[in-house]
Length: 465
Image 1 (cartoon, helix red, strand yellow):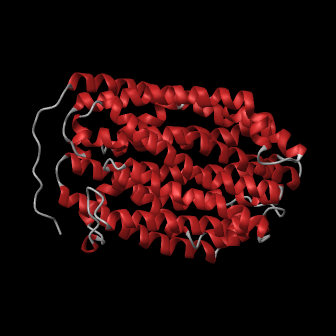
Image 2 (cartoon, helix red, strand yellow):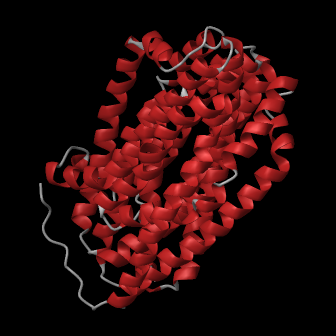
Image 3 (cartoon, one colour):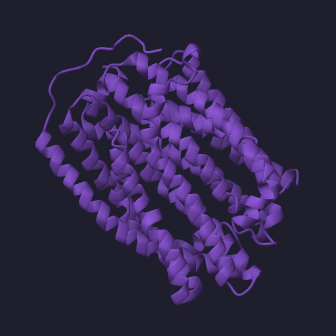
């Protein structure tokens, strides 16, 4: 039984385990880029440097938004096309993903670099953190094209059931980054610039390995150079599916800007605002690490749901969705307990400065206390994205960040000062989860009514050029 047949025939729990575990490892490894950078920067460069690197997050979120617009949309559409047995159109999806990512990530970093200082000040840079942010971003932006090509191709490998090869791409880059960081930061005494160069070189290696897999014929869908171009009809579908995570990533960048500007407004001095921004940088880094198991679960679910939805086997779709929700909820509960109990020792890995350590520990517990509620919402958004229902996915993904979190960030400090800024996160987690859970349970009941599939499969038509 080949990998595509397994998506439609193997037991769902076995498939989810086989696809999710490599995806979780790959996503954890991906998160280690930021964790390792900030860990070494915190220990070797200090609080202002951490705050400076934290100021890069809105820029990375903007670029990641365009990356997910193409990458996530292409991955979901690839799974659907494979389930429909439309292999020619699947090849178009792969080639177009590479073409559009190359176009985006040559032009966007150039635009940002032309107005870098203006962006940094607008995004809430303090005088203490500004030089570090400028130094880091001027280097990291040049290598962004390799980052997005590698993650895009790794996502497509997962979408066709090649979870192990996707994991290998990411592991190689992360291991290289972990080795190069201390060499460049401490050995060559390059500071934050060394962390940026290490990341760029690691991303280049990841992209090279991903290209090797696609060009060596080791994938179900071949990369053909004649397909590396834009197909307007296919691109529209990719944009529709990827619009939800695109808007979410943009909103995440906007939320970070709102946090930084609120800290500047409500903290008594720019030094204390820098302290809060540095704490937020550490917390975002750690939450990105803790969030990766959820992303791995949804990425393991995505090819199962997408393939079987395309094949109209709704019983298997429901099984994969329901099992993913159960596992994700347990993971979120475990993460919440870990943070509440071990916030101090975890924060100490990034800093030994007493004031920053105390601030980060307190804020980490407060900011993450409702993390246990987000398991089903995260899975539900990715479920709708996997079956191509972009509208619902957009509304649900914007529920927390746009409709609830941003207004609370602006309102709560009026009542409780800086503490109110940190309280906005857990309150929005709870409120948005209630809404999303209602939608998710209704979808599970609907899938139960639809039942198992008919046996009709659509043959692969002639390529649409």
